[in-house]
Length: 162
Image (tube, rainbow, N blue to C red; front, side, top):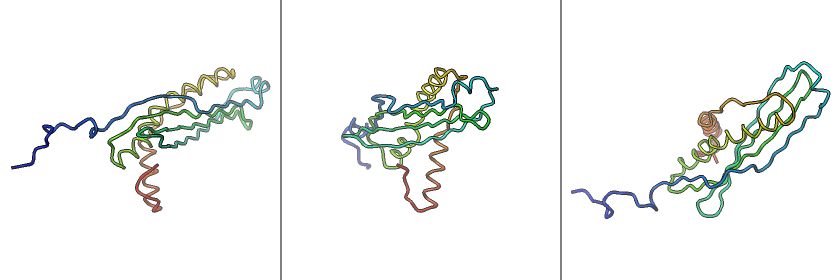
């Protein structure tokens, strides 16, 4: 005979994984158009460079802050047309996950939630700067997470991405 859990096989609230978005906010924001207004008189042939980064911080209890940083530099020919950076952050309640699932949640799932907010903020700033709209393409955070995990395993840095 197999052992039966005393609660009828149903996970209790304390045992069940929990995920809840508590707050989304802009942590830091900057926009610079160093060549304006002269840049507006030139033919518009932009090239876009995007850098992104994430970081996580444990807060009290089971709360975690995840910050997604997007830095966009747009050149028009050889000149910088504008630079915009946003740190889009969120506070998440996460409990009941093992270390690997927690690492994936903080490193890929949470940034995936934050990205559309950061993208909209960047687009809004660019338009307010009198430049054409800049709607960044979606980012596959699961693939980026997997690449970083593989890189860390190859270099012997550890098994989880934090």
